[in-house]
Length: 295
Image (cartoon, rainbow, N blue to C red):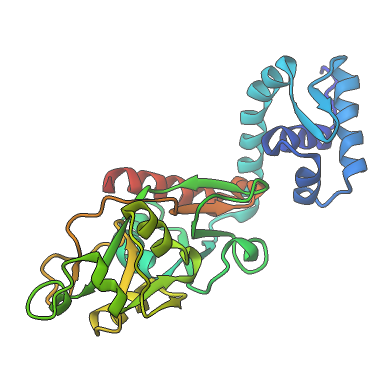
């Protein structure tokens, strides 16, 4: 049988190639950066070719590295799946998922029966606490987060793109107390999510307005924001992916259909190596499928 390079060297190469960073790959593999670099160099010596372009602090695949990654990464993933399948047996697969409560209510829970039908062995522990990205690997396997962008050391998949939607109690959208002109926001409190606290400022700037609300009150829950708006506490600046039922007697969108683009999106995030774990990969692929169907 033809001699092969050490599997640890191959794993190190694939992680550096996928993450584009020796430091990030070393953290994923619980190695020091020098130790990981030695493994990559051992693979390069075995093959007899350089696989990366190294410039100062930057490292990226060259043409030979790209070719090798395309050939061996799928095989390494298959080996990982095979080993996990042999060791997990028929036990349940469990995913610790962080998600904002409003996303869970509106876009996850309505589809969980489909997930159970497709993957009956997969079960979710749902955590609606905040700071999903910072808790990955420490209580969470994966998370759905509201963010402008994702830390470069993490895997991130954008789930939507949004416009900013001002919503308020229905009595403030029509009738005697209606807010029909954005200038009237000077007389109310603005409600904003803590993870996108500048949404009102973005909306105001895009509209060319110079209006100061009574206050900008921050919430860590979209569900609580909607409830506060429904109770007449203030005008909530939500995303258009936050579904507002047009027949809901308590709440309505102000100023017509939203037109101002938001830089914030929902993202699926995990550590790159976590995506190789079967529960994470099954949920990720199902979620992307469902988001596509939801449109």
